[in-house]
Image (cartoon, rainbow, N blue to C red; front, side, top):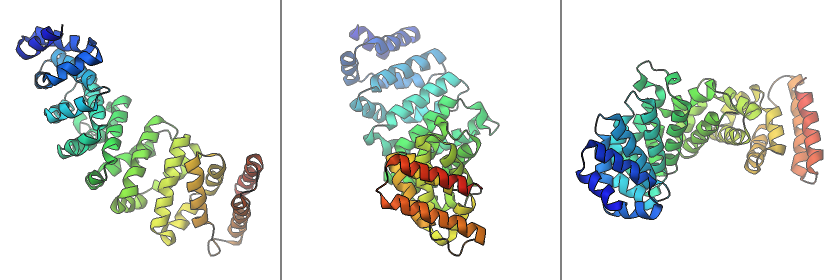
Length: 336
C-alpha cells in the first residue's frame, strides 16, 4: 500500500494521484511518518496548485493527516513551500476548500518552529483581509462561515504567541477587525472569546496596539458589557484589557471606565470569576477606588460604598459566601 501511494503521488495520472492522497489519509500514524520521510509533501503541495476541486480537497486532507500530531511533519510541510499555495486558496469561491485551508493553516501555525516562516509569507495580511471580507467582494464578514472566522482568529493567536511577530500583527489593520467582531457579536459567544483573547495578547506586548485600542470608539463600553455578559474566559480577557488601558494612563481612562458603569460587574467578577479574573479585577478596583474628585455627592456616596466593599475584600478573612452576599448587596445599591 505504501509503495502504491508513493508511486501514484509522484508519477500517477490525475485519478491515481487523488486516490493515493485519499489512501494516505487512511494509513496509520507510523505509515504516514514513513511516507513523509520519503517526501510525499511535494506532490501533495503540487496538487494544491491545480484548478481541480477534487485534487485540492484530497491533497488538503492528506496534508492535514500528515500534520496532525507530528511537529516534524508540520515543519516539513512548511519547508516544502505549502504556505503560498494555501494563501492562494483563500481567494477561491469554494467555502469547503476555504475551511480546509484555514484548518491546515491553524495546525501548521501551532508549531513554534513554523511561526516566523508563516508570518513572513504574508499570512497575517491575507488573514486580516479575509476577516475584513475583502475576498468576498462585498466587504462583508457575513459571507464568511463561523468556522472560518474562528480558525482565522485562532491562527493569528498562534502567531501572536511569538513576540517577534506582534509588531507586524499590530500594524496590519487587524485591531479594527477584532473590535468590530467584539462590538457586533454576542458577548458570551465562542467568537468573542477567541477574538478578545487574541486582542489581549496583542495589547499586552504592543504599546501602540494598546493605545489604538484604548482610543477606539466604544471599546471601553464593549469591554464593560463583556465583563457583565460574557463567558468566564471572555470576562477574564476583558478585565485584563481594561486593566492594561487603565495602567497605561490612569488619569485619562479611570473616569471613562467608571462612567461606563463597570463597578457592579467588576465587583461580581472579583468574587466569582476565574482565578486570574479575580486577581486582575481586584487590581483594577484598586486603580479605580480613589474617586474623591469624581462626580456629584450622590456619586461620591456610591464610591464610599465601593470603598466599604473593597475593605471587606481586602481583609481576606471572609468566607466566599459572605463576600458574595456583600457584593450582591453592593451591586443592588450601586444600581439604584
